[in-house]
Length: 398
Picture 1: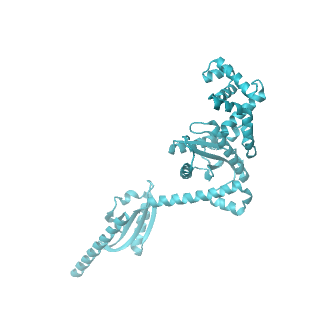
Picture 2: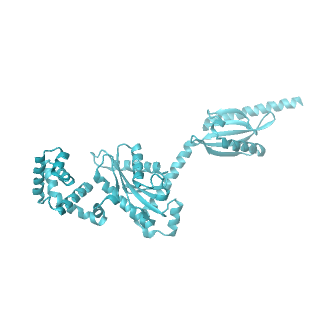
């Protein structure tokens, strides 16, 4: 009997040595950490990385692991589970029965593999796929609302898109701060890549759905689902988005247009159209890092931003300001700036102070401008037309 027990012990040791060699090779090949345990959760050997098992498992998972160990030993069949730690590591457990025994107890190999990188890549692909599907559907709704039926609405709901309740839209345009160079295909590709990264970064923004729209990024916001900080003032939400973009890309000009609050799919289309026009108008403000413009605050510019009227703005600008613009270009003067300052100021004295000029110089320039344009500043309609033309000139760059 003693001889038989000795032979069994030798065979057990030989078997264990073989397992050691195999497990060691496996651990090195897959960067895994391997434990040998009995059914009670006592761990006897470790191979591979420096991960300590109970250092990585949250308290609530320890009972699960112990139960899985017992089931694997009792059933002699493989078990497994995965979980994410507080440090955002995604770990995969494989529990495999072994013939090796310790003090008469059956054992299992617990193989712990860090799959965080693979999980992150999978999540990125999943997010990119969802963003693409949302972008395609939202653009279809915007451009072809007549094509929307119950089936597509169900599809939209499946993608997490909602048009119920009060909503509003934003339109984001980004550009390089240094525009000394001409915009080329390489620049366009870089901007598109940046937009894709921004979509992923802003993807978790509560109550908001972001999507690709031609040269802009669109944002659909459901008022009731927004963070309480933003549902009272949508300018604060736009500022957060702008700051977030500049956190990653400090050298970009970011203009954001905000549409009015609306209801339903028709309201979505109207609000986003307003947001596009407001983002276009924001460029006229020419801030160093871009501007935020609300459609409701555009005033008279709303009339000139409608698609059907844009073609007429060129003639209006040329008729109203053309001679002055040409004079500045030919003579190297800045009479257009002087004109805008006079219109914005309550008096010529104030205009002189703003431009750091002598009062008599402003008087001379005023008379020169009146002669070039053949107008009088005393006429209200003339002042209104000049102010509007200047805004449109800055807006369109014409």
